[in-house]
Length: 382
Image 1 (cartoon, rainbow, N blue to C red):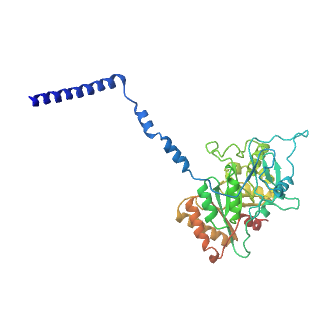
Image 2 (spheres, one colour; image 1 turned 120 degrees about the horizontal axis):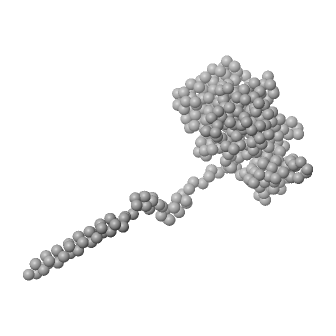
Image 3 (cartoon, one colour; image 1 turned 90 degrees about the horizontal axis):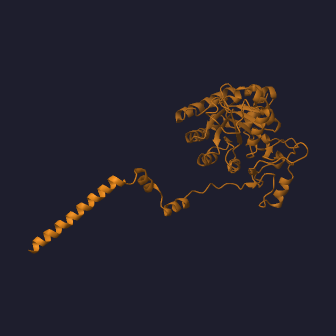
């Protein structure tokens, strides 16, 4: 009797379970279940404690020399010492607009060059205060930025090879690697876009590298390839291009000259090149054509103006493979042996920096010297 009662209870329990399952199925059929997208979103959404952990683990930006910031109008920040304030106060005043009213500054911070000691110090005699920032200029005594910020000049008597690595200041890891690992004789070219570029430039100069400023210039496939709103263009006219060039020149200090970022179309037109090169020459800066523009007329314009100029004859990493880069470096040696000098351009690819570093170690034993780009310009003047 007891066994029959137990079996009856067990049967009733199973009946209730089956009824509940059936009711749930009917509810899903008529009311609908959660959407798959909602389930994925809930699964991927970080919990609050996870988000806090991620934020705490974020890497700190690389430490670099202190760069003082001053708001538009040239107001000196309180962090400057009295000696530094006096040095900046001695700079020429900002230009005045017609009628004597002060020019209204752009609503963006202006980077004040480092004024403390060491090889990265900015020479205040070479700076002109403007509403956009500090433009390089030739000092009253005739000193040019190309002379003041030049890297160590190699000894005479041996063929000179200059290597310029471009694209720096955009990737922190690659920029740090270039500054620390490449030999000091390698010239580094920095893009003007990021706010901390002055830190990197100061660090590069402390390590002995000569520095160039990359100025965005119009390529043939513009606007598919667009270096930004400050790009020098064939169609905008001299005044607009001068404003855009001045913007780039005020982003940081300590460079010996300018090189092109893209610029295939711009460098193929003598009309816009001549005022640009004249502006640079009058401010004591060289122009380096990185060789990317196959139809560049920059050499012809520079010769006509007597402007300090150099041009790459070899892009060493057009094929990003160790063996190909080694071949291009060997080509530079052959050219330097024949002509007394050679210039090659590379990008900040890790493989490029690795091969250049290894190649440079045996350069002197092979009878060559690694030279900054200003040394090539000095020996190339006619």
